[in-house]
Image 1: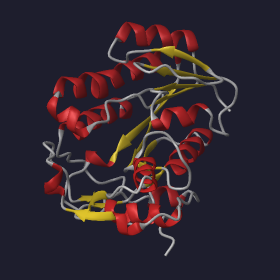
Image 2: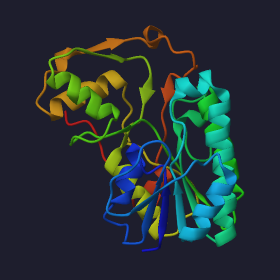
Image 3: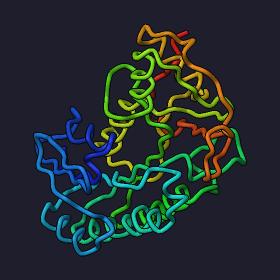
Length: 283
């Protein structure tokens, strides 16, 4: 396995990348506001600081940089467009430039939000058309990775969720916690998604890194569902009461950022490489 630098190692995806079975002993993670307890070396890094990025990447001298550090709150990005631009766009440019200086490849986790509502399912070759500032900032980041030398890899996810075990603060863990406490969970039922199972996200990144694949890939479950349906599936898997999960429309969320009603990605390209993602429904 090649040496690896994981930015955003305090986040859900980054934390699991540090301890992934496919990563070897030469792994370094970075964090911005929340220190990481791990068996691997971790270092503070603000990707908005170009000189700091250059220093860290030069010192670590990795073969591959998995750039998972990002401003991921769709609403926060809509309310603070400078946060989205400086972190997701310029921050990615800083990482790409620093990686190029040491000859490292960049693997960039991205999002289904780079697409709009012009199709029920989007594949890798579809033209992005984001509806909100978060999607636009991540698309800007993608453009920097596409121009990287050596060539980079873009991996788009959609609602990363842990479904079989307790993990960090993701959608699945939150739903389980609420249901275990006997609390009702109100989830939107008028937006289709193709969730990305957390283990798929981690394992697929390892597969693409190991095989040195470049270009754009989607990693999602092959099943389309709503968050309401996903919540009920999580309840069933853990022996909890699915009747505590209630459907609501998106309008009740009071979101400022516009969102597509079809937030679905097709992962056929990855399947052509022989990689199958997990199915979620058990019924």
